[in-house]
Image 1 (spheres, rainbow, N blue to C red):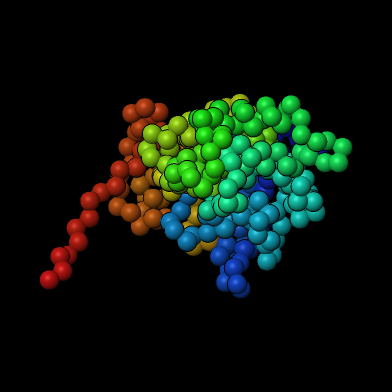
Image 2 (image 1 turned 180 degrees about the vertical axis):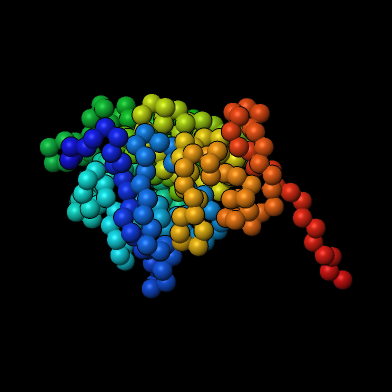
Length: 271
């Protein structure tokens, strides 16, 4: 790994544009992930949040610009090396038919295997700990295709954690989870962040973003409109600009940070 100053960003984008089928979704975007942060990307549907995360993880090659990982163009690394540096939970992941939970989570250890390093006790420990972190130990012998959507999501998070990286990218990690499990998972990510992991997550829930993030990137139509601390980004005016949502922002009674309260809107009744 290149020598980095203690406060250097491990992951940043420099003037990247990202496209699908020649349709540009993200436009000439520059940003960086603060080291040691819990960074959350927010914005309305189809604004480019998940596309940006795919670009940062090398799942999607920029049509222009560069993603820099640990001081080098991310495209210069072998795929296995990227996976040793970035843990990734993509959106709508799919598992092979009939695979058990334990075997799926064990695939998170693949980047650490080689001709000279086969499965070891440390790999087994990583799988066990990842399942414990997400409360999925009791699922380890079950097949993934028999799980509920929420259970399946927790297992995919376990696989990402099993990679053992200190940089974790999560695309809508609370999808399919009920409120209690959403909070459990967000608390888990916050704890991992406090223990030194840098986390980047795409979230739909503004109040989860406000409560747990240390750094927020707000996007609109493929561009960043604001980024910074939650109190600076999540304001009533900014929420209205980004989401078109009438709202008030009050102090969260638990954390003292911003809490978004949507306002009722009147709709004309149709005959």
